[in-house]
Image (cartoon, rainbow, N blue to C red; front, side, top):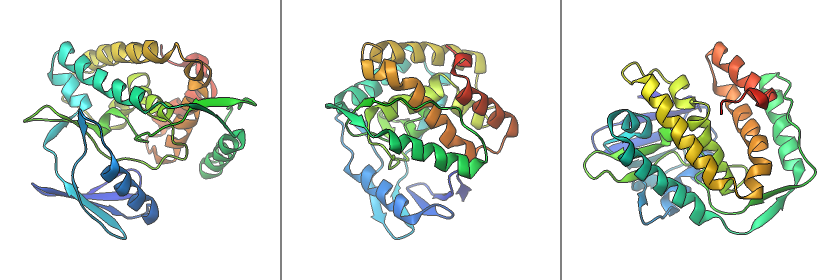
Length: 257
């Protein structure tokens, strides 16, 4: 059994994964199970859900690489091809733009501050316009699998985000490509870190260039990335990494480009 950083445990055998709520809200886990069950994209898949119970969900086990390991093992043309499919998924989910009530953001900042006892320097503008539409909710590269037999893309670990917007998925992807979240959070002794940083740098620039023509992205990316990084603080046990993330939140001028 594996204990995750968010308060869930994972039990795995050759055919089934059981994800159980330990210190994680059971209602949120159930919502995430239904969100995964309802997902559809012609080129992206999710593990089949077998059962959604009061405190756990069971699903098919996928024998695959996470995207980080895939980037370490395969050539640029394969990596870029898969990444473009992920970007296409985000683009297809973008509907009309909506104005978000800034109080939602302010309340979330206060909630994070109360959990961490840290003061966050995040400026919230009067008007926040973002795209409405479906989002995975936690689309870091560690939640994207490439199946070993078919090379199909699978999404795992959906999240019922407090805001349903494709911008959330862009922010979560750049959490990895810009800030190397999965590389820093987990112990990857066998991967070529220099190679990964070069690949992620290319993917990050590609992702940024794709969406930067949109005003909602140019204006709001920094705000939503600050908020996203702040939401990770309660789960970071490495104090040095926590300090670095906290500095990034309060000084966006330091962000890697």
